[in-house]
Length: 163
Image (cartoon, rainbow, N blue to C red; front, side, top):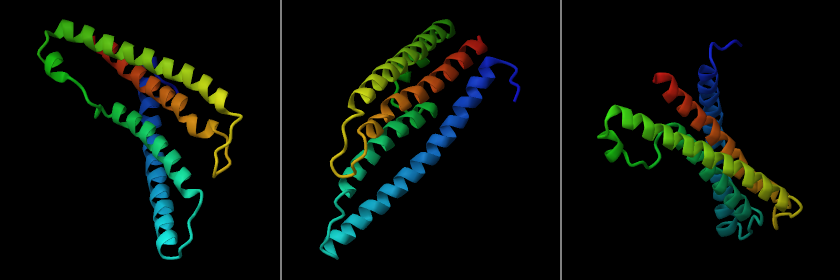
């Protein structure tokens, strides 16, 4: 595929990544609902607990939260203070937007860096019930940081190209 500019490439990448993220959100949400529903049924009807379901539910909820935050960020559904920015002159508004998106790039880069370090640190540990490496639950930190970085760069480049 040939892209005419880096701006178009990063914007399309951001859109495609968000599509995959939203698909993952659906799958994770359905799997969590099914497992937790089965847990309730087994515990109260069959009087037998699925021992790994609570740990699975916690890990899935964390992944849903981080991935959901990236999707909300992409769709600009996150909490924002637009009252002040909306009333600024156009030139100052551009500067503020640029500062905000640059701050988001810095934040997501920090999230990636320290998320990778922490994920590596806990990789030798295993979860209690599932027996998987702790790197799997914590991998969402650098993963969401990377997704946020892509979305932030797309917004930053989109804003710069409009100037």
